[in-house]
Amino acid sequence: MIHRYNGVMADSSNKLYTAEQVRGIDYAAIHELDIPGYTLMCRAGEAVMEAVSSRFPTAGHWLIMCGPGNNGGDGYVVARLAAQAGMQVTVCSLADPEKLRGDAAQAWLDWQATGGETASWPLPDDACFDLALDAMLGTGIDREVTGDIRQAIDYVNQLDCPRVAIDIPSGLNADTGCVMGDAVRAQHTITFVGHKRGMYTADGPDYCGSISFNDLAIPPQASKHCLDKGGRLLSVEALTTVLKPRLQNSHKGSFGHVYAVGGIKGMSGAIRLCGEAALRSGAGRVTLVTDERHADLVNLGRPELMVKAVAANGELPAIPGSDTVIAVGPGLGTAQWSKSLLLACYESQAPLVLDADGLNVLSQLSNNEGLARGNWILTPHPAEAARLLGCSVTEIQQDRVTSAQSLSAKFGAVVILKGCGTVITDTVGQYAICPLGNPGMATAGSGDVLTGVVAALLAQGHGCFDAAWVGVLVHAAAGDFAAGVHGETALIAGDIIGQLSSVWRQVGL
Image (cartoon, rainbow, N blue to C red):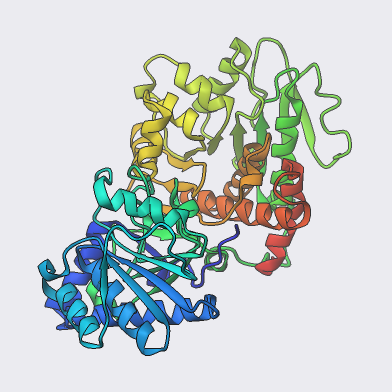
């Protein structure tokens, strides 16, 4: 599924927040800006009505599952508005409504005042609905769901109708994107106040479905307390904030030189993919620094690539010029030849992009605690990240943002943690998440292509963090274009290279 989001990277509507930060915005809106909490709840209900009515116009019988807190209150508001709009509404409460407090209690009373009835859990197994709305749990869940809530989640997931989550699917951790035992698998989620980062990485995309956002008309000053602490949700529109048209008075030396290092015997394709992606991403020159046993063959069919052979001793050829960026790792292997090349690249003064076997060799080196280096980008997938941090893949995936930040701190690097909702972090706490891309990109060579794109951007003068997030976004968008042509199952890494030009044209470059 290709997700589309509006806005640019600098727009506050594309900012990512933790659950705690969103609660802080809520608090500021209510207690500092004097917006009544029930007013915000009613705005949320109106946003749900608008989104659901436009997406599921033929749904006549709505089931609304309401939990014990304010998320349940949102559900009662939606129930009242839906009934007033002529829908048949079944409301099921997972908690005694008489025990609700605050705004949620008011929402239930208003629902009751319109003649609305509330069914208790469990519901009949043979009940039929045209649409199910999940208002059971909000953003605060930090432990595994159990009891009636878990049974109700399973019930909703078994229904033969579309499922819509209000604010966030119940059971999904808003910060990490992990499923807390079980979660509602929604086709659509309407979220409020701020984008929750867990919705866009790990399990989040699979459980949220398509996402729409409504800020509930909360003024921007309510988020001033966390402006410097959040992340960014990337969008293609954001590319125009950092990418500018080339000057007419330019030459190939204006756009840098990528030294792509790797390709042990039997792995020449990896370094070729990396080099070709760098060319297609604007590098002025690209040299493949590769095993002498295939050096004469690796650029067949792509004569624009220069080649330097590396002998069996693994000695790195002299790096030409101050405009050179090194991309090391694609097809590098883990032999002594590989280690010699990696150390020579590490010890150079050139900006560095480290991928694939380069990361595996890094994790093998003794005392890698001391291998921190400025001006480099690491691009691990979860297994490589786990090796670098000395933990399990499960631990990496349990909190992808924190894992990437830990790698940035350990190695003094910008980090691209690949996967569903790729995370980009730096050493000062910035992070971004890419919502584009598709499962077809989980194919051999896709990471090599990303390395070439990022290295080309670095060679053209972008800083490490900008080169990283722009590269990730362009790579993902090209993958989506490629899936549109070939489908996800048939997609191969070369198809991503073939669609890079579509992305550059889309942003006018």
